[in-house]
Amino acid sequence: MPPSPCFVVHADQDRHNCPDHIGDDINAVKVSARDTGGALAVLAYDGRARGGPPLHLHHHQDEVFIVQEGRYRFQCGNERIELAAGDTIFLPRGVPHTFCQTSERGRLLYMFTPAGDMEAFFAALARIEGEPAPDIGAALFVAHGMMIVGPPLAPD
Image (cartoon, rainbow, N blue to C red; front, top):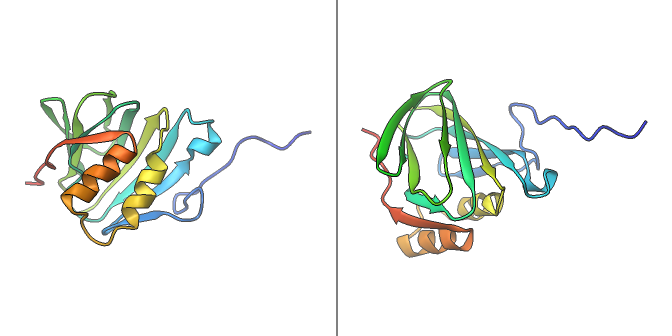
């Protein structure tokens, strides 16, 4: 019998054994673009600080977030939505969006389809010490198929 094509990544693991530490927060790859021929990437986010990324858009990826713990405020276009554990949101490509963790701790499971270059984006972001300068952050987004279109949401 041939080996099984399935794999398991346990709760405290990263698919490649190298989770990305971005500030106090941790991104762990659960299903890599390499596993799916670029069709999908699934990541887990362990939010240890309030806040979130700037308002941005993906040119080629749809994004889905599932809140596992904590409270989050999402913006999709001009709409702001409050989410809690168990809630799911779909963010279509080409539409400006962001999220803000409003609780002290939070956890998300999120996915990109197609996967694009998002794993490389988070790895590059993790290599930057502290908050990137605005021009560096904008260039990083552009280099990975995204564009910053506004500021982050306030956690309050």
